Image (cartoon, rainbow, N blue to C red):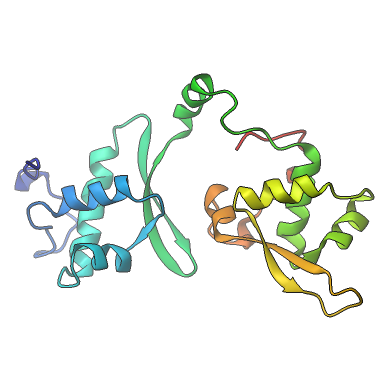
Length: 202
């Protein structure tokens, strides 16, 4: 049985009259956020709970979910823009990282400097070919690096370049933006600072 919603005096006073979510909606939205791996937009939530639920009620429910998790040390509700749509997701905070690492040190290997520089070149200069990456770095690209980046869901093929040999063009994915906490490529940090790190644990 689901918990009862907090009493009316716990409602956000900034909410307009009539936007208080009905009983059970907050718990349902919270359960969906906990169950689905990908961030959810209002449209996605509406399709799940029923299109008759007004968007303002879903927004009110999301505000209540955020409030419920506000005091939690290890989990928070985040919101960002992806592809022009606002999405929400319950995620672990940085405070949980040491515990994950202690529990399974080999779970996610670090990226080498070569992999980082390759990823940075793809992110900043996409679409870019393997040959162009090698020309920029001055060394050959190990095929395992591109395979590793593709397996993490960060790099994808953007087709072939209209040039001799028709080399494959590479670019980043939406998953790359999400995993690095970016709303768009415009938010990428300075290239030299990013590529100059020795390794990164992500």
